[in-house]
Length: 133
Image (tube, rainbow, N blue to C red; front, side):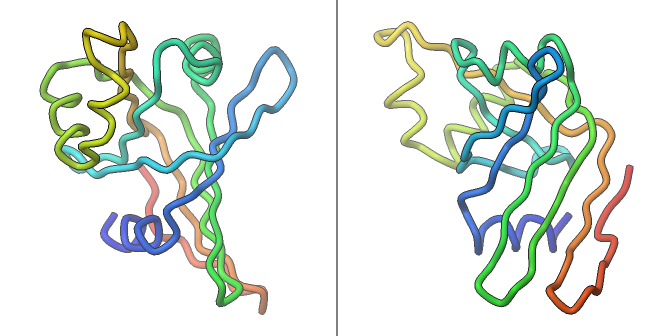
């Protein structure tokens, strides 16, 4: 998990893919955190991505660096909408509280990888397994 989080921190924009019906949907994300030994993402409950994972929990994320390496994580997510998880997200990225608060009426949803395969790829063809659970 340490290597995954370091790669995501080094490359903070990653692409989050969901499924809508039978069509893939991909969008840029910028928030991931380790919490309780799991990889967590924060998503506005009003967003299409959140609604898509309510229907189908399969996701994949991908990001790349300028050295020709890319990280691909795939698996399924589960939901953790406890106040403790949201509090931790606000600590990690305080600007989330500017968006998700009682005044805005927008609610933050928390999801974590419950089945995951993370691989690091390189342009030379080397593939390295980073984490699987």
